[in-house]
Image (cartoon, rainbow, N blue to C red):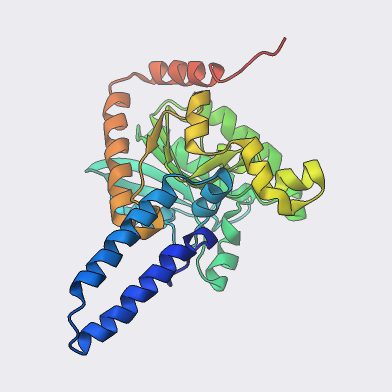
Length: 318
């Protein structure tokens, strides 16, 4: 059971929940306060629904980063069976910030790949805070090419703040690894479904996000840079993340207007971190529906449709 973690704007809800707990203690002592508890519980649900239906872009970014939000391995456990993780890029090593392997989705063999973050300090370090090195992207590409060879659909889960910008990553060809993935995914002759489940950060996200269908959870974000990074560049002040978030417009509601994603997947009231099972079920239904459509297309139709999809996102300024 994950340790409860509350965001700043959730504090009014936390205060009411504490009152409910206090009343629960009194009820054990024989006091008849059931109606008071029920009234407060209803108020909590109303407040939560109101707050999460009116999130600012900065607040949405905070929800997308929530430590208890489901990660790739959580979704794999809830949505797939017979998962066998595959390791290494056959060149340098194994990157723990990207996981992937063979699994069954509703009985159909598939290749599943995604960014993986950590929750406690040890796991965060082990997963490099969800920031892949180039060997992570080369591992992902190796698995995608294997999927193409065996005519398996590829399902990816995007949740990274950025590709790791360390010196070692640059020396081993970070930019080349990302660029190669973009090129190869564009031409991959098998269905690709992309799920943006948390942070979709820059090329680190896009390197496993060129797909036939791009789904995005309601409270996730997708942008060329983090709000703090944008603020640091524009105003030399990373604390202006909230201001930068408004300029970036990284939310699912913003992104779908640009045609970058195909579908917004609703989350439980209060965010995906409150109910992993319900979130996974909604996402699974959307993947299954889109996979049925994509399985009807020939390899040539998939590649052509993917080409047209990404070409249509471009804008020429005069």
